[in-house]
Image 1 (cartoon, protein in one colour):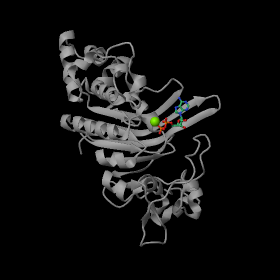
Image 2 (image 1 turned 90 degrees about the vertical axis):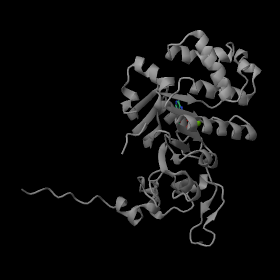
Image 3 (image 1 turned 180 degrees about the vertical axis):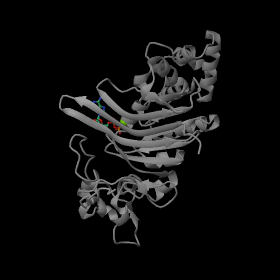
Length: 340
Ligand code: ADP
Ligand code: MG
């Protein structure tokens, strides 16, 4: 097997606050192959942005991170600052939600796109300006827009500028955190199609975050569903979207399995309640208080990701665990001491 471009191993992030530690990401393992598009879905507060920021060490100083983030085999969490600066943009770049706040209002967008090019590639100002015009064309804008200021652009155009910036240094990985959430529906679709096409034609890997599983399933090869700081389901996009094996994944996909009703196996239904407070997580499976198909022991078993049907599809639900995970509730078997 070839080394994945990105390998996230046992990643945890806790934010230190006056009221204690907020465990925003709790042990995430994910891999992304070269050229692959991985979607990460989950309601607000599930830890998606924290995960994205941790990948490039963009978290505030109050955050404590453990685990490994291997980018092309090199641990981002262990890099010196010089190396990290080079990797941001040239190795991996981020498109944030809400471009409005990420762009400098008093600098032309041409200068802003040129900045990472001048910083990371040894090119002249003229060559950088040419590259900026090229990039603007590629994101569907007139090259002369380089002279515009952010306030002269629409929301969709500003997000196109962010995409141009993310591509400016030809990274291997683009991380897009809710890149279209602030835009109206028509523009959302255009921007997603644009990102999809640009990364595909360059063989760039994409990690795209959204609360909307259907949006992600259109663009991505694989989907990961996050709940309360964990990945609770991951697999091929079409399997996770059409045949989610975790009740939370199913709820996000807009359909909910109805127990004991095989005829109407999937029926749309809203999800009750809100995601839990990371400082006060329910016992057992963190999703159990909202789960319509919970079993009695779901408040005492914290399920691990387990093979669930199709290739590389896993889900952390007792319903896919052997013996419905009951063996995990039992007292651990006494360990016999080796006699020799
Ligand atoms: P998502 O992007 O899925 O909405 P986030 O990663 O933004 O989730 O947040 C995960 C959890 O971490 C939430 O409970 C949020 O309130 C908390 N959180 C995010 N940023 C901070 C911070 N800087 N300090 C303390 N808690 C934070
Ligand atoms: Mg977020």
